Length: 61
Image (cartoon, rainbow, N blue to C red; front, side, top):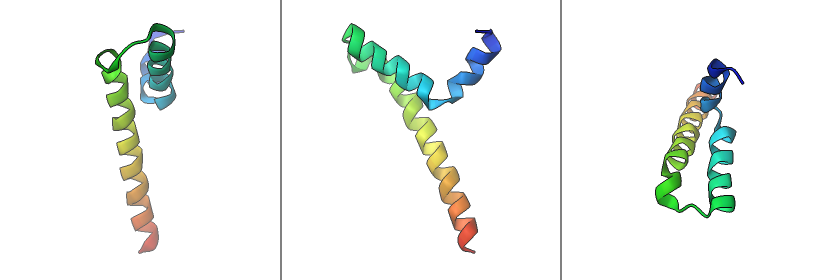
């Protein structure tokens, strides 16, 4: 895959989930190894939640 597409896919949560799940399931990695992917998932989730909350509040006006 081209490098620009790899960089763009870092915004997608499924990329981080696959990396996290493979590390835990196949290699038995602990939290100290996968904390970066976990933090990325939490950050993406928080941003999407805040975006949807903002849109919902605009809808109620």
